[in-house]
Length: 426
Image (cartoon, rainbow, N blue to C red; front, side, top):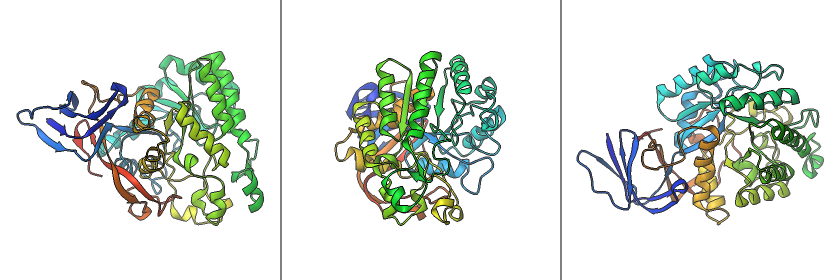
């Protein structure tokens, strides 16, 4: 199979390319990249003269809910949402039922993804058996089943001893340990950020210190033990500064932020009249924290933007704020939010966004992707920078609708994906 992607603006920071290039794909791989490529015999042509061509985008933090909670999302609907959102691959967290702490669950998830062929799925295996935080899961068995990282996300690895052993053991497989950083003894009943607005609303708070303390502990452990440590959905100024300092010392520490923590604050809970679509964990933080995260995007401290796609059934969210589950969906909004609110105003360049959504996630997960160099796998995302979109949750391809961004008018949207050179139709 041959496909010539012709006339588009190619943005590939891994190859320091940003300009008009043709891309020839042959048998699922990038055969040639050049300013102009003559149409080979038997090749199809895809004219993308009004689009941007980038290495396939990777969301390294999603919850696909299968197995066990298929009423919220399945591998099929989640990957359909991923493709519609411009992603060619996702990494799914292990808090399923049963927990993904063994080879069979990983293989089931990968098999489902391959059946539908909408996006690649990379399972993240649990750090502890059953995510109970007591005993290290069988890491080697999970690696044989296809996991690309370790996390107890949904819960923190609360035990210092368990985190130490996870970091040490993960080194044998070159896996990142991905931490949901939260000290559960601080604000155990909290439902939103502890601050002015929690006080005004009379709701129990989740202090930023609960995240900061865990990040600080883990960075100390990583300094002693080695391994690769990654902070999931980092949300506070102080945690970001701890990561920044660790990087300065040369530690193997990385972090991700979400679009909602970059664009919203805890004031949104008040202004939305306690909409449960503004309830997530970590919670929406203060304006000071939000601005610090934006600064971290600019100075390179933040490594990845990830959606933390957390679907819930409408009935679960249609309760009073304190009883609703934490989490929002994000696969179908992330790219447009980033293009409109980060790239368009000049906070970051388009090339930097591709690093955050493609090249760096691929590197942290150790998967094939993040580049359209000759010989690389031809996973491609297409972006339309000037097309306007209004976020309409009723049109989401995923099963759930829990988003605080409904009705937002944005400029810039995904325009399609290709997996190994094959056009995906979500």
